[in-house]
Length: 346
Image (cartoon, rainbow, N blue to C red):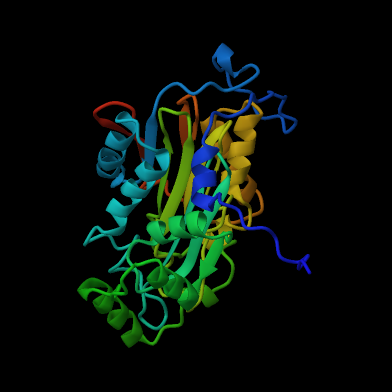
């Protein structure tokens, strides 16, 4: 007797499905913006659909140019945007002196560094993510394995580490001399984690930022978006921020473009700002105005926070916005040729 609950096995793996469906996006109908936001003057190609122009890679913060230098050659040689985003973010994750991304920084309340990361593949809108990943350095690469090798979208904590080891990653300490010293200095004061402080309606005392976000478009017109971080300093063990949440730390749509965010993730993730920005771009709002509107929705609720966003359409138009960082600013870099150009947002 046939077991009716057992589905027939398919010869098409998830990875093969991703590769076979990596085709150009369907036409995108433009609609008016009901929120009253100014519609951006765009090229005639936007009317009816957004037409990809040429490969690009965008990466946030001051490490963006060097990260793009690793990712862009993959695109210029005909490689995948997925590989380019992974390479760019791996570069930042492995920097020996980067305190806010990857190993060697931002210890939690008990002195342990944990990582969050997410990657989104535009052609299938598939997502892979890890949260509170322990003892594995390349968080974005583990997230890619979640996307390509499983039907899951997010794996967290010690189980994310077990999955990573199962996929061939090596366990290693994420602590170095800098992160250990920083935790010891803080622990000696006997202070409580600022995670227990009141919500930031009067002021934002959160220290740090620098989540790396990257968006790439390859020659085939395929979009990929990713981000990685080690979170907020002295967080409560087990905390997961905005970075591994699709629509919060990063988001993309194959027919429109992508957006990435950095800053106070505990506030920003409540508003899904990158999803908001991409959907505004779908309606004809410029990337810059879309980022401004997404951040304004948060500040209109009374939050005082530090945060920045960058967005880019698949036709190459880009822009960014920030709140609470007027003194230090926020930046992103874009590469479409041999040299990356940096765009500061003050």
